[in-house]
Image 1 (cartoon, one colour):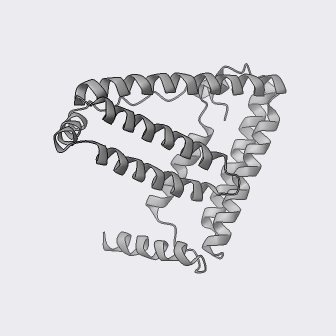
Image 2 (image 1 turned 120 degrees about the vertical axis):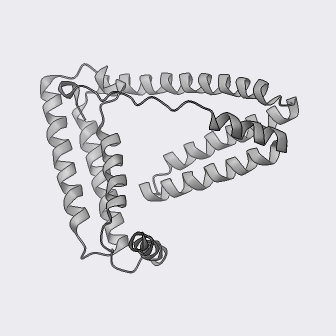
Length: 223
């Protein structure tokens, strides 16, 4: 435990000055990186609905394997600084995304864009329903409800701005999203009464655990 704490402290200092050499890659950090890669390449419903050809499936497979190999080699490189490592990782991710996009036809890209818009609308509807349930559950006043709605909308706009900011690296976006969510939680807490906070905390405690999703069949893996 002491070794893990020490490694985390050293890593934090390295990121703050961006001039020290990368410390030894710890298992916890590797797990997080591997999880991000799996999410990045996991075949979502969008890809399964694009009617990919066998040639496209093979291209995606080859590109995925090439990218994973490059990332593995980068993780083993302890001869570069943190800043160089982050820049190289960002470059590899952008190159991979560009190559993946180029495999799709324009018709498939348009279809994917449409599905994403529809998905965003569905999520918005679900979020509004959750807001109504929370309003009734916590017995919120109209004023409280309006403030929470405004806070949520500002949060969504902030996240969109961060996502579309091409000047930021993935790590920088991650940090800004984390900070934005923290401020949004603080804003929400300032609106609720102590009784409502206690009620919400109790609801979360008794909320049933999410059921783990089944992994996609291997023969359907695309990216």
